[in-house]
Amino acid sequence: MLITKHKKGSKSSGGNRLLISITVVGSAGPIRFVVSEEMMVATVVDTALKSYAREGRLPVLGSNANDFVLYCPVVGTEALKPWETIGSFGARNFMLCKKPHQQAVNNGDDQKPVTVGIRKSSGSWKAWFNKSLNLKVSSH
Image (cartoon, rainbow, N blue to C red; front, top):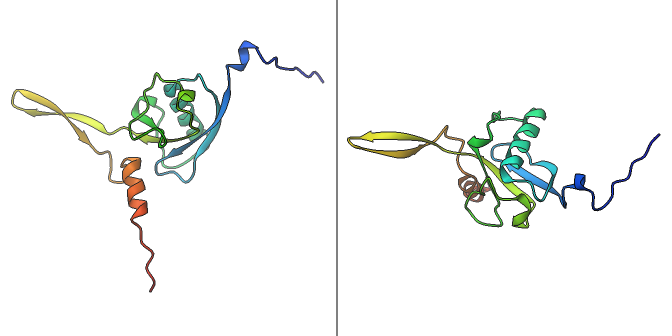
């Protein structure tokens, strides 16, 4: 049996590694995996979608990373930029949401993009979070 040891400064280590947790809106639980802190947000989204599909989770999301945005609730309400590094936020918990589709509406000469929901249950994580806070427990 051959045992190999990794050197601390080796190029294959890819810098510091982080265990991140990504909650997919509408799914039962988070996806957890290890990433390099220099990994781009777009690559993390792609890895999360592949891991989600490999585990056979529901609802089925698809595999196009361009259809999704990653949020970091600690940082703010803006979606993370695809070219940013995942380690630059100092967080390990993220939320993955489907982007709302935009369609052009023809109003004479002007064409303005209008956001159209995919289906009623696919809202943003903020709406889901606010809805979950508003649930009330009634006593008989």
